[in-house]
Image 1 (cartoon, rainbow, N blue to C red):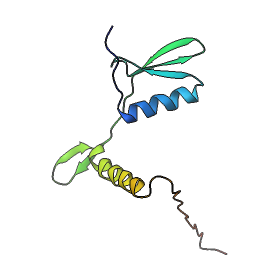
Image 2 (tube, rainbow, N blue to C red):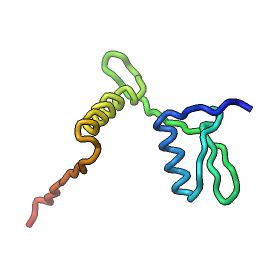
Image 3 (cartoon, rainbow, N blue to C red):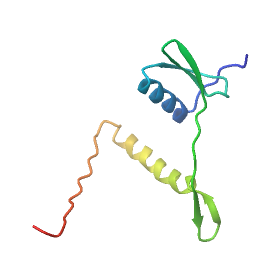
Image 4 (cartoon, helix red, strand yellow):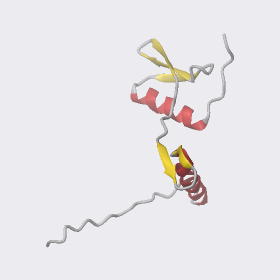
Length: 100
C-alpha cells in the first residue's frame, strides 16, 4: 500500500465539499486516488481533476486559460488576507430596463 499524502488545499476543499454534500466523510488517499469518501458504509475512491479551457493570447497563441485566471485568483487571496477574511463583500448591481 502506498503512503498517504498531504493534499493540496484545493483538492482537500473539493473532497470536503463533496463528502459534506453526500453526507459522508473523507480521508486522503495515496495519489492516485486523491482521497476516499465514505457514504453509507461504502468507500469510494476519488481523483480530483480540473478542466482547463484554452485561451488565445495575441503573441503566444493557444495557452491554458488558467494563465489568465491565476493572477486574479492570487489578487483575491491577497485582498482576503488584507481584510482577514472577516469582511463580507457585497456587490450591488442595479439593473435598469430603461423604462419606469
